Length: 622
Image (cartoon, rainbow, N blue to C red; front, side):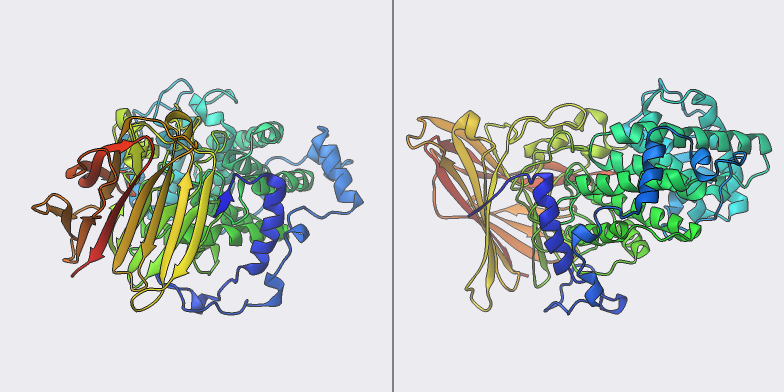
């Protein structure tokens, strides 16, 4: 089996060269429907798609531009470089951006009615505490302080109708944040997203009748751009750094005397994208929401280039093309995303809107080696399998101990899911259970001694645990057509219990049967003595009705649309005593942050410290 380790940046660049050359981009007419995979890959649309990353990952410039970039980095004002013998122009937005990204109409309607609508919770604008010392859920802070709500407002009303609402909220925010740098609003990620939103949605926020407010907003735009010039280079690698540099680039494109800032920002943005994205196009946080956000942000930045009538660095377009296929791999048959790394099941409408706005048409990435999600599509059945270590703590958004968990859907119906929603805690998901939703037990995988396979720390961070995942994927003969077998093993329990967890999943060629084996393998030649408790959890999709069999070794799973699947334990008894199958309560968080009461099947027992093997099977019968 091939060992998957976290890939260092240098080797990621080499692998990305191959990925860009290999990945065909389909014309719009050939774009597959959600959950449908073409039988054979078409040829690349044109030879120029086969770009080597080395040709685009660095910003090319002549000696003059390199000197301008150096001068700006040293602190010489942009106007002094761009027009040294002229008086600086007053701050204004020099072009109108037509962004293809659209917001949430329902959230925009709520804004016009006087409320923020965030993760399904209505928060009155009039009484909202915008101050730096206020304590809000991270999701609330992100929406409010990034001014992401401007896109929602634009989607719900004509500019004339939305301008007054935008002015009202902006005035409250500016009053609370008279001093730059204080509070969560001035995290570089939120500051960068806010500056991009102000510039992209300038007609909405600057087009009202309050001239004094417009003057204050323009001053805030200037101040934020200068603040990001200093702080973007200091931000650690990840989406936060990309967002900060995106703000610098947007300001360089749309404010007077912007060329020095733009050149400075382009170099930083392209490097930050290279540091954020793995060799297969997946962000290193392994979070589908971060992947979606990165695509959306790049679409806005490329729209800024179009508005300014300036050609963007080729790396930006290539990076956006690389980001789309891994995201598509996590769509189920209903078009919405699986629940991974703290996110709820992001809706098909939201995913489709971002992909459509990007203009990228391609097929899902079947094997995302670095990002770590394997995908099998057979008939109407779709399997997603987490076969990589969790993200490093420095990359994690809301890191989860989910290694070797899987999700399974049949057409639009989800059969096996993960709970999801830890990143949405503080909305309709109670904050007190957010930490529990990051635990291994909240995922459809094996748990030893009720311990997490990777330590779950505070503030979305992760500690010690899974470092290495071994993976082997192959086709094997089946009854009618070849089946797909994925074998993976992780070392998260090796240090504590002297055991590694190996999981083998085999999906039949027609998608009607999933055979699974969970194996505990001693990591030393002489296995430890004694027993250890284990539980293999299968969280069930919303609306799935469970009926345990009389012998308590099987269960019938009736899906909401009448499809029937049978779950059955294997004939082996590899434990150190009785192995039981029970149905317990669970929950599942949807894409709007709403928790739903569901059930889970749990295989429980005691395993020998010298190892054990536990097999099970899911079969479609109706």
